[in-house]
Length: 357
Image (cartoon, rainbow, N blue to C red; front, side):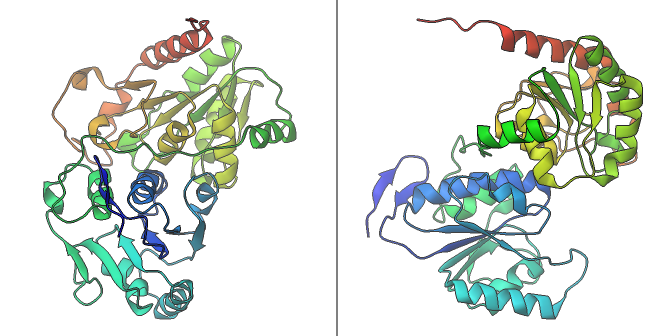
């Protein structure tokens, strides 16, 4: 075994060539964060092909994730067990010959197909009733502060100290894809801001997007509203307020949202999956946080700005959330002027000529 030292992630094993399966969370933001796990795994095992299990919703993201060999796309309902689907998935996993499965969710359902497939090493934290489904138990999950810490630590040898920093997730969208998307949608080279008004729960949905969009189009910007079908009503309100320079791009598949965000000069998003998508593409991203903590929930990729309620600014306590899902008082207290100032500042900085040495 080659055990060249890796100062961050333990010994490097270049001799192991067995395929590796990552079983991530399949919410969009958590799935994007799962690419950090891919990057850590590729550093520990540089010659192991890495596949990732995904739902049809998140599958388009895999095409832009460097280091992933392929997606194993399988639609398993979240709310119930479907033995026939689990068995079909297990047969597919068995045919792939995986040596290891890293199982991030703590549910027993997430470990069932890897166990039925007979994957020799099934790694995960203790949780629910998974005895017999996992055979490489990990302990100490509660001591790990963030979801990304819990996920990425599964790659490291037991007993390894948590690194100070993890690799940032990446979504590499080819410039040719972006150019083709612009042409197909009739967009020229005018500057554009992508707005992502959706999120799970009223406590994370900022109501100021129509007024913001109106101000941005008055500044000469195009405004593209991105999101799933659930954001179509919000998109209509934004476009109605902003006029013909605004476009509703919701209701399309996730790939179209990724391309729109990658093509934009800036993205403004609630604390949502598309905030993580935007940051991982490298598009400058402004995140709007109500009662949820940027320390816990912001992307690992640096945000261009994080806008919070005045009452929470400067709060260093790593809270998860301080409001119920139906409590929109914190997110609604953020003035449009605060977000607009952040947008203008980021865009002005992007237009500054870069100093040359």
